[in-house]
Amino acid sequence: MSNTASRGAAAAVTEHRHDTPAQQAHALADAVAAQLQQALRARAVATLAVSGGRSPVAFLQALAQQPLPWERVLITLVDERCLPDGHTERNATLVTQHLLHAGAQRATWIDWLAGLPDPQTVPDDALLQWAAERGATLPWPLDVVVLGMGEDGHTASWFADSPGLDVALHGLARLTVTHPRHAPYRRLTLTRRAITEARHRHLALAGARKGSVYARARLAPTASLPVSLLLHDPRSPIDVWLADTQS
Image (tube, rainbow, N blue to C red; front, top):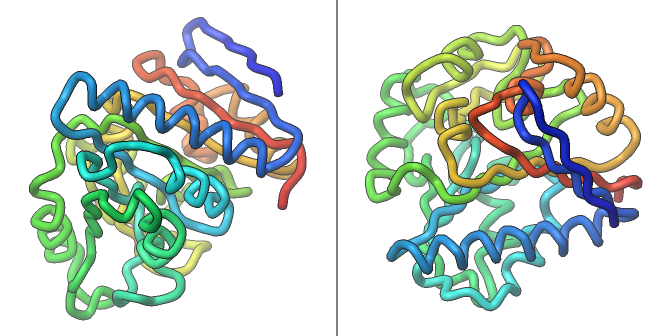
């Protein structure tokens, strides 16, 4: 494993390089657990937002084993696909399967869309109101946000050239809805405001293809690679966790 840091006009980016996704997952879990412990020393509760998809499974499983006072931790999602409860492609389904067990089952789980009737058809405004009510007890800013990245350069549910992207990147709200042009399902997502105001940010990715996209994103901020906007934001340092191979 190696660590490198770069600073300047862009955000402070600290890179953590590992040989395998398994090593990456355990190191990231250790780092997140330490930051949650730090938050709990300062406040009554700690808050964590995690991402879905296949890539974070090993990290979620490793984090669930961390010896934390989980009953004082609130967990939510960075983004969610607007699908019925229990759907196999809901990010909430993945988190409940892989994180909310062992000690972590004592955490408070805030599922933005839990119980929402007709999540695929309800108007955006009603969906956002529902999510706001589910998250009413969530204190802001968040303590820790763990992000992934797609091979198209999206992070959270910020997809290039898609309806809702401008609000996600430049709006004042902490939650918004996006409509990806080249990915399935409408999405609920944390906005750039919510992520940049968080106390700690992590970005995890693995494999040569994502590594190449990440290298391009490091060159300059551009809405065509939304993740680049987090890598070039001087207000918000970010830890980037890289694995040379992809599981």
